[in-house]
Image 1 (cartoon, helix red, strand yellow):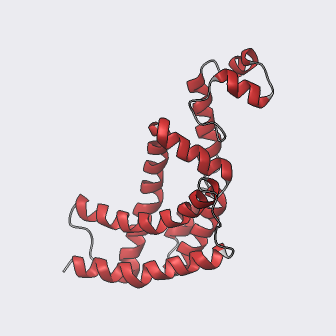
Image 2 (cartoon, rainbow, N blue to C red):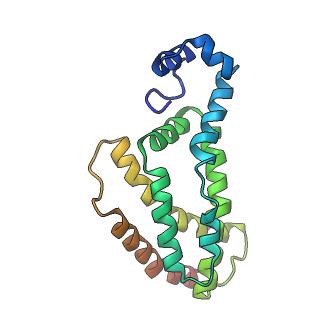
Length: 187
């Protein structure tokens, strides 16, 4: 799937794997069952449950928590097969991406928003739209790390040599601007 996308036939997948199509169907009775297993292996099993703990640990300054999380998350997603499967899934299998992104939003972005409000004394969102605005700002910082993988594995372009330093800078830029923007928007 990382090489040919989700539109590849099971015959092509079996050939790529060096097995027969009947053998593939022995383990996966349908292509959908195989796609479900790919989702489990690529997106769910590699998910680090410690990320939520790190993000919520108020014994550590928020900047340090975000940097630790994004550096570890980058190691998780900035691999060729992950980025390519994610992109192919978005083009042909929206459900995979939607499930993953909903999980990311609830387990990471909403937690980061809560911690951002706590750390900087930002008033609570007055409604769902205000929370969505917070999440969008967090998404922008977060997706900038994912986009490094897109540049490398989709566009075949050079990527930063010092990824960890760049992540530190992105978090610092986010924290230098977003809290003030949110406070001003809630006056």
